[in-house]
Length: 442
Image (cartoon, rainbow, N blue to C red; front, top):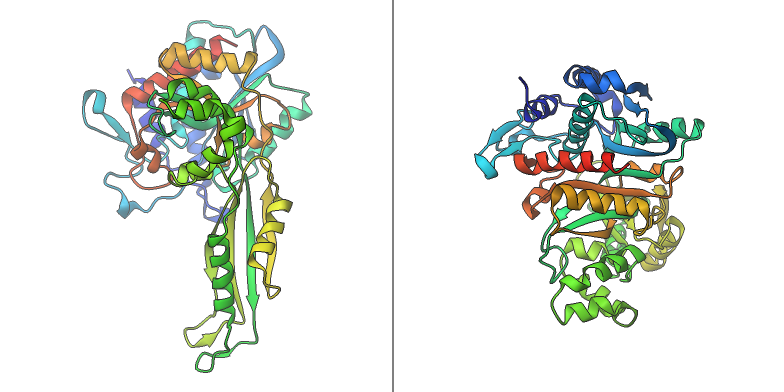
C-alpha cells in the first residue's frame, strides 16, 4: 500500500514547470498532475467538490456544518524551471537520500510549494476517511501559475467573491519554523507572515545618438546608465521598522538575551537603532527593515563595436510596508538625478494590508503550531519578503496569513528557486499534522 511519502514522491516527479512565456509551458503535465491527485486521494474527491478555474487552477469545497466564515488553505501547483546539470540528484527524481532522521527527499517543489500542497491533501484525506465533518466550510485553493505572478489566484478570488464568500482565515505559503534568524534569538520560531512586501519593476533607459564605438562621446548611454545604477546602490532606501517587524521583535524580546531583550522591548526609543543595526546583519535582515532595489536585466548595443542608442536596466524593487509604487518611483528619480535617464514603472503592486496578530484567526494558527510542531516553538508575526498568491485574497478577507509548517535550516531555505531543493522526510510528515490540527480547530 502506498504511503504518504510514496504519494508525495509521485507528485514531485510530475514537472509542472511554469514559464514567463506560457507558450513554453507543458500544460499536459498539469493535467497529469490533476488526474494523479484524483487517483491518489479518493476520499478527498468523494467528499469535496472540485472545480477547474482559469484552465488549471483548482478550487475544492469541503462542506461544513455552516458555510459562513470558511477556512481557505492555499498552495500552488507550478514550480520554477531547473538547470539539471547543477543538481546533485535528478530534480524530478524525488530520490530519498540518507536514513532515519537525516533522510531527505530531493526534488523541485519539495518546499516550494508541493510540500504544502501534498501535506494539505494528506491531512484532508485522513480526516475524510475518518468521517470528519468540519464545523465551517473549507476551501482548498491551488493556483497554477504563481511563480510567474499569473492569473490563477486572481481568478480563484474572483470566483469566491462572485459567490459572496468572505473567509475567516486564509493560509498560504510563507515563513517557516527557523532558528538563529533574528539576532540573539536561538529559540525555534514559527514565522507567520501577516503581510508581504509590494513588488515592482522599474525600467531605466538612457539614450544617445549612437554611432561607431571607435569614437565614443564623453558620457555614452551605457556609462550614464551605469552611473544611475551605482547611485541607487550607494543611496539605498532608509531603514525603519514596519509594524509587522515591530510586532515580531516585541514577541521575541522575552526569548533574547540582554541587552537585546531591552532593545527589542523598548522599540519606541530604540527602533531607529535596531533598524540600522539589522541592515548590517546580512541580506535577509536588511530586507525586513527597508525597501530594496536592485538592477537585474541589462541591455545595450546590438554589437560589440556599436554605441548603444538606448541602454536599459530593469530594477526590481520590493516595497516595505508603508511605502508605495508611487513613493518609491519618486525617490528613485530623485536619487538618480539625471534628466537623461528615463524612469518608468513596468509593473507594480503596493504592499499587502497587514493582518492582525491577535484574535481568533491568529489563535488557531498558533494553537496548531503548538499541537503539531511543539510547545517550545514561538509563533511570531513576520513580514514576508517575497510575493505570493495570498496577496490577491486580501480583497475578500482581513485575515490572510503566510506560513509553511516545516522546520527548515538555512541551507534548505537557500535551495529555494536554486538547485538541490530538498526537505527532510520527518519534517514534511510533521507538517501534515499542522494542517490537520488547523482544520480541526476550524
